[in-house]
Length: 211
Length: 211
DNA sequence: CGCAAGGTTGCAGGGTCTGCAACATTGCAG
DNA sequence: CTGCAATGTTGCAGACCCTGCAACCTTGCG
Image 1 (cartoon, rainbow over the protein chains, first blue to last red):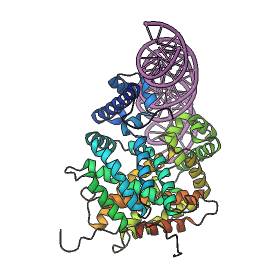
Image 2: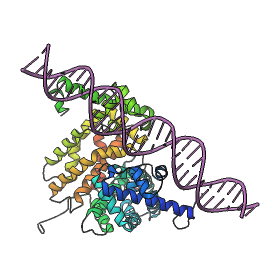
Image 3: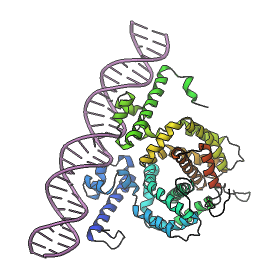
């Protein structure tokens, strides 16, 4: 291990890298929000972040990645939390609790995420990219779930189902949270969608009392 | 109901178009399976289908689209089935039944789909493209669900959750079906994953046997 | 036959992304 | 302070993706 990948303990180099990466990502989101994602060129983003076009690609594999701003750190941290959750927790509950960490990250960067989501909403072609970012994470999560439940990713569909489903509801929660005019805390929204899952997605009971 | 507009109102022109489209799509999948998706150029695909590169783009908006081969007809048919399902069915059940139509289509083209899935598995960047194809479908499905349950896509997360989750499990089911050595019918796999949903994704009971 | 509709093609051109080699900066001794 | 090695940055060439445009050819139909 060359670098202590974890946050604070970093040299000036590492700090500058993080700084450049942030600048690029922010420029990408801002420009995309201003002009629409498909009218923003990598040149423009690099220009705004004051680095060369070539350098852009040292940080992000594609333009879309800069806009969706996938941070692999978060996924790893999340999985770590699932692994270390008490073994007697049901998988869904373990995942929901592990999501608290991710939620904190997202709420820390609230403005940025809201911008991101509006951009994505206006350029649906980006949505897949956002998912693609989490595709690897999802696969890893499936293996973690398999471990926890003594199942196999190859022979049982259960782990993959749980991974895919929780990924899907997390996305919905963030979207609703970001696009809602009067937002509840993200935490609340996430709890709501997980509750829907655990009761088997029955239709919301709106008996004769309201509406 | 197989290929409605095909035989009837098709002039030679229409037949040739369909033919070219199929040739391109098949060539794309075959070449991708042979050499890996990212090593296949549009030129090669067009060459194999014996049309010019420019013509390729008259049929598919992108290389990925040719490989994933999204057919908008299927999504529309599926939604139609959900809409016309008996109103007293729970949403999940209505969707599961409506999927029978899609399942038939996929099993009709079994070989092609298996190839597709192996290609996608080896080139994860394609997965998002496959989902992107269904992103619009998913949104439409959310509205259908909202109608059935008297909820609203804007204020309630329920419809979006159901749409996202069923999309996710459908994808898992097809993947498992296509990559399994000894495949059960797709229908069975779909039933299994939907059962997992309706019991709230509890872990399969491992210690003692049940079900 | 002749015309109109529509499919096919080549070409120009802008955008994305990668490999490579040179240059600049940083961190670390000595 | 001074080299040295590691690492980040940049320009450049080049392959590929994709689009608009105009010309060409085929088909359908009177």
